[in-house]
Length: 370
Ligand code: SF4
Image 1: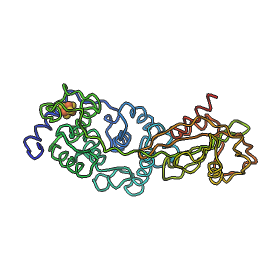
Image 2: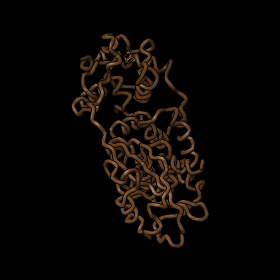
Image 3: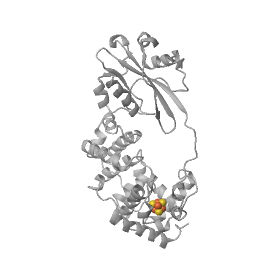
Image 4: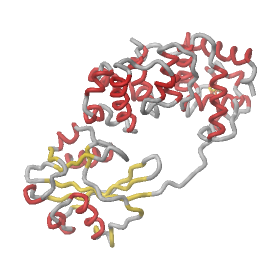
């Protein structure tokens, strides 16, 4: 355990800062004109997503929502359409909601205390620490996924870093390592070390400023760390997605409820989630599947007879806690007699411009190719 020794942690921090001065990233878009708003948006986008993927999204987002007021005033639909493709859409919804709270409760100014920042939706302890250290130059540690990986290798941590007690220990180490000056540079430095040197796969230990202190490296066991999460088999769910096409070639979309998967986004009508393949008997769509859709759509049953539906290829999409099998079925319907007012009819181009969840976009794009 090397983190109880103040002289040692100070040396580690200084070595990292020296490395950062020479090899760190200094020209990322959110490092120019460093405002709390820009750093906050970048930090949220960077959760679970790599820098190169984030850059174009960040630039488009800043063009459309240059200040917190613009974000707060925008519709949720507009915000999510700028998020489409980044995944983890709750991040976009939380960002929008937090912007509105900043306008109403903080007079449009980004809060400056840890308690106020961490109280905003979608901001955890590490993101709050990053904003406070990078922009407000206050001494707060961070512990994002990259930092967890670096520390787990540095000390050859024998347990999964998401495990509660392990995480508490890592927070103590992150706190001990944070130096008494240059907080902003240190935070950037440890993020850069995780992203560019101590990478998830093929870490570049030969270029690492902490090589001589790294237990995993000394043990020649870098690939053994961090320890993986104990395996759990992900359950599988099925759902039928209705592609309803009217006489003009338009399709019917509905807005998802605000909570749950794809909250607030436009999507195809979908039956309730089922385990296994209950909708299909001998390769045919069974009554339960149609019934579930009809209840949801409040539709004229004749519109969705099993015989008239064209079954499109099913495919699997993976969420954090389960796999979803999507079975799209296409029906040609008469809009006048369909009898549902719970959605809207749009062309395929208009649908794609709405920023659909990735698997729904895949279905719509396959219709374009027909
Ligand atoms: Fe990571 Fe290798 Fe550096 Fe250890 S020596 S911290 S494994 S890059």
